[in-house]
Length: 329
Image (cartoon, rainbow, N blue to C red; front, side):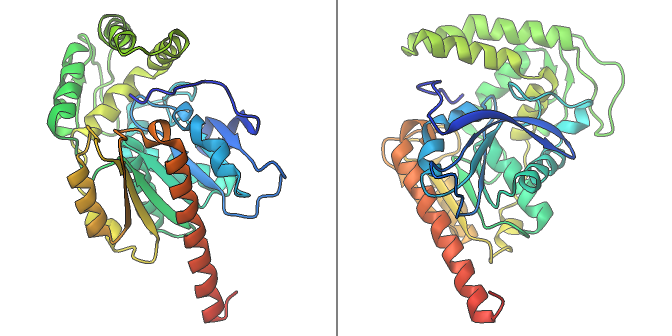
């Protein structure tokens, strides 16, 4: 999971709620000191077990450039309410949430970190790139998670009593069940899952954070966040990460949409080689950040914010030039 280094809100960052036709989403937003937003707004989507706080270190840096910037908790994450039924965690449904948030906020630049990149891709493909100014995949991959992190995720699901996680469908949850949803998944036993998640935090994740030297207030936040996740969402998002198809070829067809692939040189989730190959297939700009791992916004905030700002500015300039050349400016 991404681990913020501070929870203090910068002067221009505030907590808010984004209300959409698909429900309400907890958010952090930053605005320029002048209050004048001359640039297109941007939406930042966190990864699995992450939250809007993962972007705290870059929000005010991004807003410095006359830009409105919003970071959210996806449905079922931390302070955003969960779905009414398991089908609400299908990739297409989560992608529809992202489009609804973009429409509600006017955001045109989309950034997806890790699992948020897979869901951002769903939104971009559903909209066929329309109304977007750019799309950034940050520490995200072309498809299903593989390697050590995939094994860790399967082990977590097994510890929660969830079976069948290798093919994107799940059952169990401590002996739960009792009826499927429109997506063909059984509703999981919520009480058993909550107990299992709490035990996972107490016996594994909390000691791991403490051993890594994470400050006490951040450890407490990580605990609140982990336990605040909707159990269905935690399980079904994990199942999708283990079975997500490679949709890079579909995304590459949107060749008029500027894209950026940004990742740490030591990424331990999707390998740097996999992300480099994805960028090549997309014809996207690519930036590998030295000494960063899986959370560039936390590990290298200045470099990450500068790269995003430069990319967004270039995308807007290209669009303005194209519009002027075609006589539609």
